[in-house]
Image: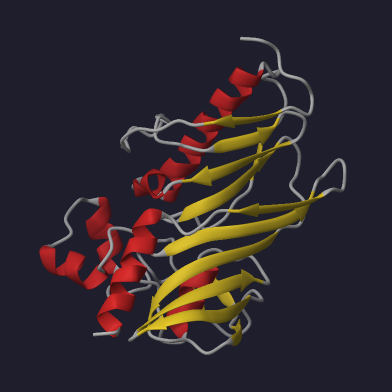
Length: 259
């Protein structure tokens, strides 16, 4: 393989069926990376069918190693993987060879119910009483948590929503929308029944569960990341369009609402 120049941009496409092998990265796709400084991963919905956030982080790390090796880079430098709510979402993720700069993040979500436009300002903390150990809760005195919500389109009792993160807490968008009565479609933790998350991990979802969820994964998509390049200061605007599964679901809801 020919050596790559410092600022050369490459597009790597890998595809395949999702796997429960936590070391597998065959199903990661559309990795665009700057060999000097940073990688941008545009993750398909199929990547997110991994069973836990911990497994997905291991998968991202494996994909990172593939990119590093393909680029002929020294294996000794430290990796920084941008951390976010990663359970069965899709869209842009960022990986850097150094600490990442401040990122303006915009997500798209399809919700049950129509939220009001504006800022949801509800402090959060990890729920110590929840047996799942990953669930967050709204609580006075918790960590400052603010999400700017804009309804882009309505389809009956559903909404296509733009969510700009003004802070970056675990599960922030999901719990904020759920707390105002408009949970994300397909959310197994903050949607109809939090016990669905455990049943899904054990592959024990019932037909009734699947019917209530409507989608096999949550309708949450990392749509746009804006940041300045850590080395050059150049503004970067990384956009991932709504994926096919969510686009098709939304079209169906629009058609139903017009009947």
